[in-house]
Image (cartoon, rainbow, N blue to C red; front, side):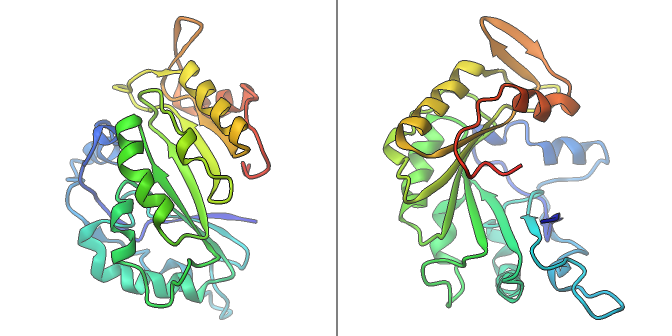
Length: 245
């Protein structure tokens, strides 16, 4: 299965502590670009673009990371999202995955044929600390979704997730630290505690990146961006069958 990125609109608004050092704002600042301005991109119709031979440019069976320079449930995109759902439905032969900090909006912006969810859509609810988890996860568990992931990132505090870890509802919990020069430290103890909760509940767990500053055994490690995923993998603490590559 090939992976693609579909950023159909760009720009967002900071709404919680997890947004403080947003990588989109960080990258845009280097180009003197205002990240708070939300605009549709030239790749808006990427999933249904066709090659000269007539086939889809994104082949069948692809995994499509969706809206990673914004939030798929952002208010400004409500009109555009109608067409986005249509493209996702048309490309039922591909898997689409988006993460959101606005999960409370989901049920008000779903397509009319959504029912209990599209089989080809994975929705990840981002929670950075206990406050975010307690605010967002009740909405997440109540929403009609086929495939749910909890994304503990950027992890800036320990999170007690046990009451939300229904193995029939949550397929994967993924944890990772914050990147960037101003990154807040992530404690490896927090990661291990989230893993413990997942193991006890039988929910798959993945440590997807260390972040730029990782505290382990009382020592602060500064980790270059290019090594943050590989160092997390070397920790060898993933659990379960739904962790991906």
